[in-house]
Length: 216
Image 1 (cartoon, rainbow, N blue to C red):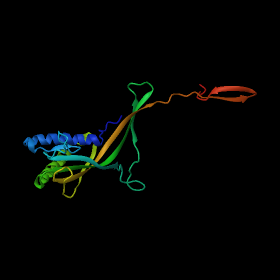
Image 2 (tube, rainbow, N blue to C red):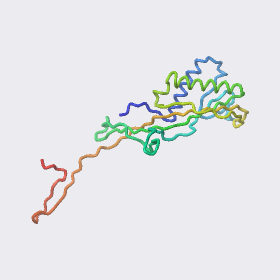
Image 3 (cartoon, rainbow, N blue to C red):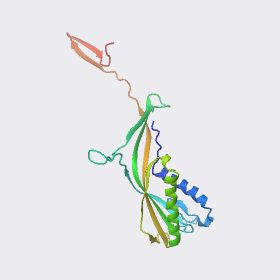
Image 4 (cartoon, one colour):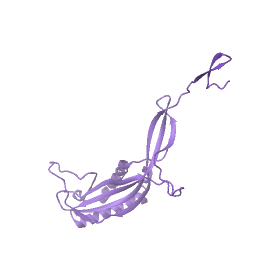
């Protein structure tokens, strides 16, 4: 059984949400100034449209691929094209079965998008969020024990504005390179001894024997 911490796309963003809540609580801002961290832009309770009463930070996976596991290979960097067996043990609940742990590493680009009602507020929030990510990633090593094997700031995208949500909003986008250690556990049935009988003629008689018998 592998002892490496594991994460996937969703659990990484769950970890960022935990960081966000901790850091936001330490700011002691008035509730009306608190941004929200969500996957989808919030809707109004009446269902009439989007709720733009709060500043919003959205998250999404910009892209992901198998991570390079070695820089020096016969043809350059090695990037596996499949999953690898990391451990095997007898099933604790089923006789004749084993539990196999299979894993792989992915290089993901995580994107965070700030929506704010003013240009100044957008700049304040993107700075606050970016410093938070670097502080918890490197200062507190918050992600390191949660299946993240590599974390780096990748880029800040050009500033822009949008009216996609019924109001002019100022947008800031940040991207981070994140290597995730993913793994799954599968059950497999063990191969049992198979008895194979073979027959041959010897001296005109048909003799039958077990090919698995070593003669002892």
